[in-house]
Image (cartoon, rainbow, N blue to C red; front, side, top):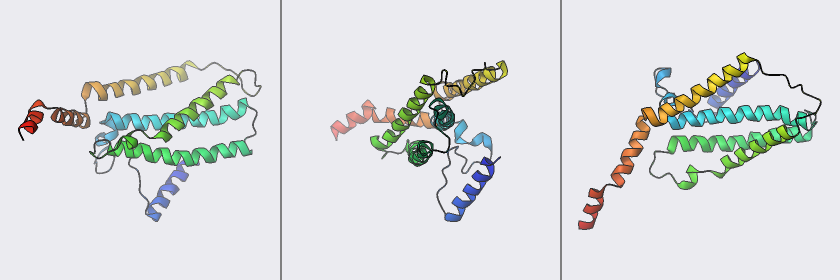
Length: 200
C-alpha cells in the first residue's frame, strides 16, 4: 500500500523539478496500450523484463541474505547495502535507458553499448544469490515449506509466456526496428556500393 503513493509522489516531484522522465515502455506519442514500443521492439521488451528480474532478485536476496547470515535488519551492513544499491541502481538505469533509446543512432559508441556498471550489478546479484543459497541450510530462521502447485505453475506459465513472446518478437515477427537495422547493414555491405567507390 505504501509503494503506490510513493510512486505517485515521486512522479509529481519529478514534474515539479522539471526532471527528465524515462519512457521505458515507449508510451510517448502513442494513443493506446497496444501501440507501446514495449510490445513491438524485442530489445526494449528484454530490457524492461531484465529490470523487473534484477529488482525482484534484489529484494529477495535482501531478505534471504541477512536471514542466512543472522544480520539484524536495522544494522550498518544492511543500511550500507541499501544505499549502495540505490546509488548503483541510478547509474545502471540511466545506462540501460540510453542503450535502448540510442541503439539505432549512427553515432552510438561501443562504450555506450556495453557499459561496465551493468556487469557489476550482475556480479553483485550472483554473489548475493550464492551467499543466500550457501548459508540457507539450518540457519534456524526459515522453514522449507514446499511451493503450492498454484504458485509453481503460475510462475512457470509467466516464464514460458515471457520467453515465447520474446522469441516471437526477435525471430518470428522481426519488428520494424530490427528490419531497419538489417537493411542498413545490407546497404553498408552492398557490392554495388563498394564497386562504385572504386571507380570514384
